[in-house]
Length: 162
Image (cartoon, rainbow, N blue to C red):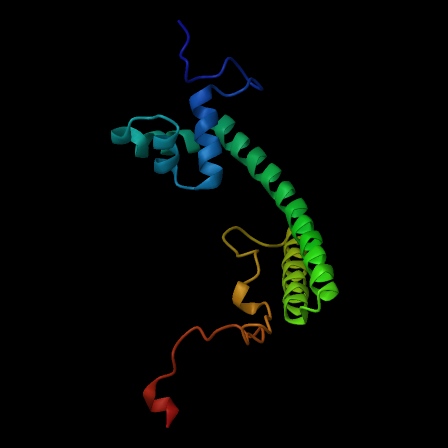
């Protein structure tokens, strides 16, 4: 008798519950939540999530899904920039200059974010646990008055102020 939760062999597609676990884990990287969403019993979801995350076939599938999502995300940024170009052109045609400026600012922010991600993806020297996404606070946004300087990491002590 075959176990419905174990694949037939290497390279075989994952069983439906494991595939569902992978799909949910990519959206919300919490093993317990993903296990419950995939249909595992809530009482054992924590253990199931741990077990599944340590399964090489599941880990490979999660990596595959993440790579696909990253690829689609890159295309999505380009699509959003193109849509903002349409907004800009329409705003200029109708003399809504404030809206045109906002569209250009949004395009610039998206372009900087996409470039920073491409740079980080190309940098193989980022070690495990190191942040590779740019800090959103470090991206200049004239509309909000953010000059791109990172926020202070700690409040100054009263004795240092004056």
